[in-house]
Image (tube, rainbow, N blue to C red):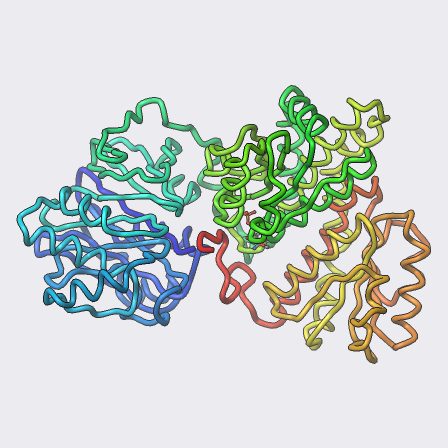
Length: 601
Ligand code: M6R
């Protein structure tokens, strides 16, 4: 979590405005506080405070500050409260060094005691500040800033993406990466470093994703990267990113989340057009030849993975679903001849990366399903299948869920093709999916908005389904709790009688997902049970199906097959969560306590 940015240009500009724009793009990674440090002829100028980027930047007049080199940070607090002192950048005693950091320096307490004993005075409670004092300490002993930076790096343990400016070397930004994501943006007359790709697109689409253990510095005209004291040749590592800067802007929508819900038809169309039959076929063969198959992911990506895992049962493949952060429980199973499908939008979620590393150490082959070219997951997997959803900025995953489901449905069909199943109907359905999702938005946006006005008064809601409808129910409930802060739980509908129904009383909202027609009758029994307790029953149902008559509120969605339905039936639930959040005055793009990419365990 946290977003960092650093840039050095060949000539002076209103760098404060440039840093502010970078922070606005990074803000989805954390929004407890924001800050910038700019190298000026008088030394380093730091402006930082608790609050969102727009507030902090207008409070301190970021846009008026000129300079050629600077770093910026938006924070998701780990060590120390979100206040001005703990906001980044952090500096040394003399104020000549400024550091921004994403990650956790695990041994900061011992380093801090050592530095305090040497006379350093600490201002904040953060782990990050030790890095500035460490560099200062080594500079005091006669090292150059570059030498001091390397020496300081050798002392810290943990996860970090770091960007550092030092007024003794005004045209450099030092950087380092271990576990937390960091990329270099390659420019003409400037170079930059940033936590993610959308942030660099305003300046360049040429990027070099850094690998763990790499560090170096940028100047306006050069890039130096080392690993373990040895220079790294980066000449063939520049990737051209096929996203435009506009894709990462709100484009007239009130929130990124709403924009991204509406972008789903295009995102699906791009993902489907970009399917690579040969790659799908290779991966399908891998799965069919595997002794064990795992499907691993976190949050929304895990739920998308569940659609695949449940779908594979059709071909008698018993895949094991693993929530990334729980991988160690399954570690004893991991073996050569096993294959894992690792699903992650960002390709940087630390839990998923850790799981994949543990699997590969034991010889498991890993297939990545990710949206980000050259992400850590993509680089560290044996095969990669890309969704082509474009940048997703809203913290709540929307278009990335539907594109993951679509891509995994295509992979599922490929497995079916090899085992001789008739997959033509599914492939036809896949082609129709973008249009079906467009229709799902058109048919349900108005009613989601209206129902949100009712749901905003509810403290809790249940999302019930069965079979392949369960991942949709889980995803719908996750959206509701993460952005509207309404307590929402998803259960297999039959399971609701084993405890959860005790909470149900008059007007308690219960949302049923009817995406699997074979389970309709049983699910209707559960509707009746809830109605007997006067629950407010809501359904996401196939368009035109008379099941709608049995429910108080209905969202109708054109029907495909139960696997593909996961991508379409989730749409009204995304809209319902979005409009409930808006009705409650929440900011759906920046839900409290969350960050888009979770880079701490
Ligand atoms: O980038 P990833 O797909 O690995 O992210 C996984 C989860 O952190 C993510 O899906 C999270 O659950 C979303 N905020 C949910 O909307």
